[in-house]
Amino acid sequence: MDEEFAPNDGLDGLQDVGYLDTWETFDAYFARHHNDVGEIDGLDDDGAPHSLTLQEIVKEELELTRSAYQLSKMYGGYDGGFAAPGIVSPTKPTVKNGMMHCIKMLRKIVIKDYDDGVTPNFAAIPVILRRIQELLHAYYKFKVTGVRTPELMFCDFPSIFSVSYVLHEVGLTLQLDPPRLEVLMNEVGPQLEEMLFDDAHIIGRSRLSVIELQEVMSYRAELNADDENTIGRMMEMSEKDMAAYASVYFYADVMIGFLMTAGTTEDQRRRERKSLQKLVHWTTNNNMRAVFGDTLTDSLRSVYRDESLLIKFCRAGGIGGLMFDCTMTACSSMAQKAVRSLPEAAWEAHTSTALLNTTRSMAEIKKVQNSWKPLDLMILGCHNIYKNYGITPFIEASETMGWEEAMFYSYLAHQFQQRGLPRQSEDEIRALYEEFDDSPLDIKARCRWAALNRAGRWDFLELYGCDNEECCERADYLRLRTIKAFRDEKTETRLYEWGQGMISCEACHAANYCSSKCREIALSSHAGACARAQEGPAHAHGPWQDMLAGLAAEQFEEPF
Image (tube, rainbow, N blue to C red; front, side, top):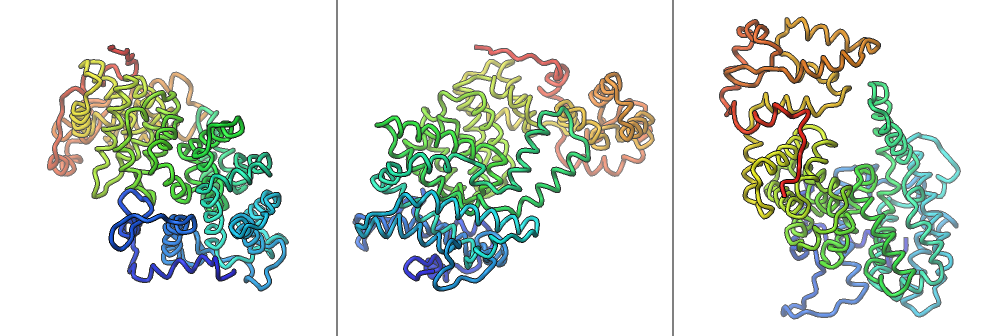
């Protein structure tokens, strides 16, 4: 790789980092070298602002990518993430149509030739990009399947970082220089758009196969153990396919560039619309997030730091993606600050799908345990959703999600309706959450049982069924679990009612029994666990008791 743009040059400044043992440490390191919202530093020694050149701005933006490479070397070894090596060693001169030949040509045309005043051969860009993606697909197909193809001999990069870095550099240069991007689109707009908005071009084939299989399976009422095992094995294998992770920088950077320059022509408006749709889909879909990882979040910093872009992104449905980035991504601190600073306009005009994505992301926030307070963001989100849309989004979330998060949303909707709380009730929402969090274990268990589908109830018999080991009904259901042919509608209904009819230990509320007889039989065997459970708080009564009685048939109505 030519010394003038060798990505490893950027690692010299990381020698004083020390031991980057976690993403949190890495995030803290990055924050020390940038201001607290991730913006570009631009101050002289005396504190006066100075004008940064395009090259300086791009170099600053690439700092996070260089740091991620350093982290990948330490924890991914030299065979994972950015540190993964090519199949053959780079040569000078580079192999024609090889990865390094294509990467150098891409950078030369978009950056060097344009800057030097030489007429850039933009017509070659789509062909070069397709070749880069073809080689990435061939490389990761080998990583996943072990199948060797002739294309592997063209995978002559020192590391994946050498590819991703230049793709990011070129993408940022186009994004931050609208005239340059406009010249490119005037020459090869249709061909470039075709690639930009085609997931099949970007995402590796093994990843696409898993996504397609999951979509097919989603139309089935239930998945059996064989189906789940098949998907699980395919997902595990496909995790090695990081073609999209390695290349998404360029595509996301250019799409964000379209958001910055949109407005005057029909072509610009179309590109803005399609870019928003694609970025929202990528950031709010769990499969897409798994495919792109933190590299997509890295590119989105350009959106998160600009209020007008952020509002545009959120109103198009991207607020769920922003919420998710508050959890364990490399830019979580920046995302958290962006959420807290969102103006009211960002919460307006959301579709039901966008709101469902947002509530799902908020549920992920609740799971995070860190030095910051994730609950604050969840309460903020619930407050803004309730203020703008009432209880309907919480009802929909409770019907489509599982486990504790779904029940919290159901509880919120129920309490909003019963108490008639005003829509400016952030403090009341916090109090409701505390009530929910302090609810007894047996109440939560029955609520979770009600939220399970048919397959889930059979799978979790031991967890939510009768805790009396000698229970005859429990033994009968465990036997029927292995004989699917006997699971008729009557049996399914009987199982559901059996789980809903559980009573708890009167002392600790941590054990469930299907009858008072089973509870009496288990007294002696449960004594030790009962004593331990009573060491923590257990509240047997409260608003949960009223909610539980009609949980299965609860009908919510807007009280406004």
